[in-house]
Amino acid sequence: MKYILILSVAVNIFLLMKLTAMRLSIREIRTGFSERAGLNSNTLLRVSSRDKEIRALAQAMNETLISLRDAFHKYERGDAEIKAAITNIAHDLRTPLTAICGYLELGEKLDKSPELERYLSVIAERAGHMKKLTEELFEYALISGGEVREEEQDLCINTILENAIMNYYPALSKRGIEPVVEICETKINRRYYLSYVERIISNLLSNALKYSDGDLEITLEDSGKLRVANLSAELSSVDVNRLFDRFFTVESARNQSTGLGLSIVKLFAERMNCPLNAAYEHGRVIIEIGF
Image 1 (cartoon, helix red, strand yellow):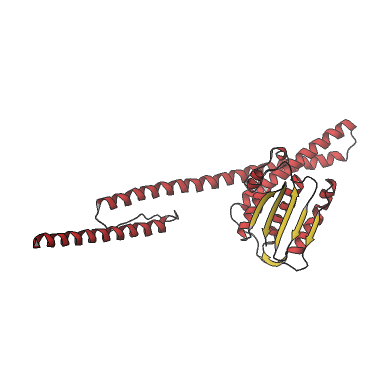
Image 2 (cartoon, rainbow, N blue to C red; image 1 turned 90 degrees about the vertical axis):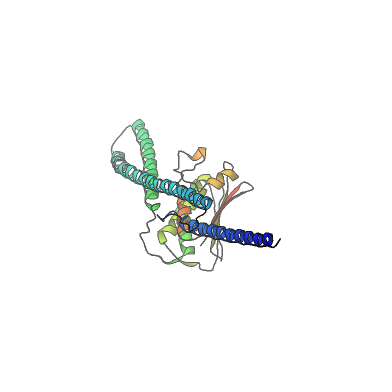
């Protein structure tokens, strides 16, 4: 009986030691995996345990890490190649389009028949549109590379917004849109990149102009939140959730947009840590950004 009790205690001690060793090995694997999960490290998991199953688990996780790293590096290379291709293609298109637009301007000064004038007007309009799309594509390829080519500076959001609204007023009037504007008296002074803030506001107004059913509300609150809202029957809650996706356009707007305007807004907002939200409520598209 005494020997059985001693044997039982010994077995329990052995199992306890085994369990403790396994817990330590699992903790070691968990910590090591967390450190390497960022895919920027070239090292693999190492375990001190001699347990066959623990070592097999570590080996399997190492194989998974290797596969993930390979896939990640292929993605990075592919993404860089696509951006470079877009930049090169857009650059190659800009030169002949600029020349075409230049020759069309010269042609406007010459004597021509009404029919030829009408044809040239159509060509000029389409060429100008293509040039605009090419510029957007070229710009997006550059900015998505992560480069910031300017210094932050002290800005007044109120002033930038007022200037943007004035710039868009002729286009809004042409569409019969009389914007309802509420800009707080409090000066919203922030330290941001000027071109980023100007482009964000410009693209928000351009998007509203594109999809508005005849109204536009622009509000800048004391907190620095900018709200742009408009009725839009052609959009839905699904469309609004995808507005910030690259190259997303609504079918009726495909011939007018690259679908990059709001994706650029999202990119710039993220770089400046500005919260950005979109919603679709009672037929209205509402986009808010916090400066």
